[in-house]
Length: 193
Image (tube, rainbow, N blue to C red; front, side, top):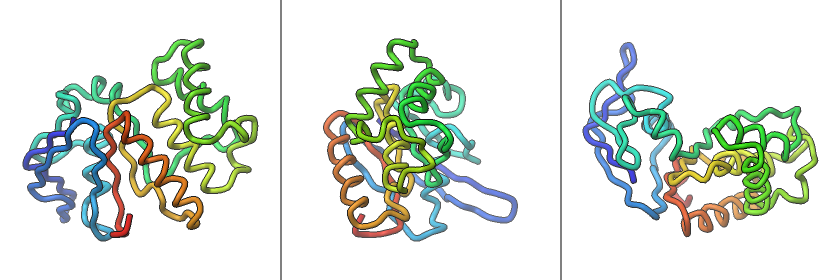
C-alpha cells in the first residue's frame, strides 16, 4: 500500500527527513514513532500530497504521490494533527459536505455520512454544532471525514493528541476496528501509543 524509498526533505537551512525508506502492506496498522521534530509529520504530508519531497520516491497504492496526486488522494483518508473542522456546521451537514467535495454523489454522500457517523459513534451528536462538541468528539468527526469516501489507506497524524484517557481508549478502539478493513498509518511521539 505504501512504498517509500530514499525520501529526503530539506527546507532552507534545515533537513527534516534524510534518506527514509519503508513499506506498509495492505491491511496493516503501522505507527511512525519518534520525538517531536523527528520528521513524522513531514513524511505524512509528503505521502498525503500536501508537500513535495526534495528527493526520493513515495507511492501509495501503486501511484506516485507527485505526478499522480489525484489518484493518491482518491485512495487516501487523512486526519492531520490539527484537525481543521468547520466548527460552525452540524456534524451530519459537515460530513455530507466533505463527501461531496471528495467526489461522491448527493445520495452516496448521505449514505456514507450515515455509515461513518455510526462507525465513529457520532450518531447521538449528528445534529450538534461541531464547535460545541468535546475535543474527543471533534477528533471522531475528523476521523469520520477521513473515512467518508471509503479510502484504502487512512493516515492519522497524532490522533490522540490532547485527548483525555477515556477519549484515547475510544480512538484506539476505532483504529483497531479500522485495521479490519483499511491500511492505517499513524504517527505518535508517545511510545505506548
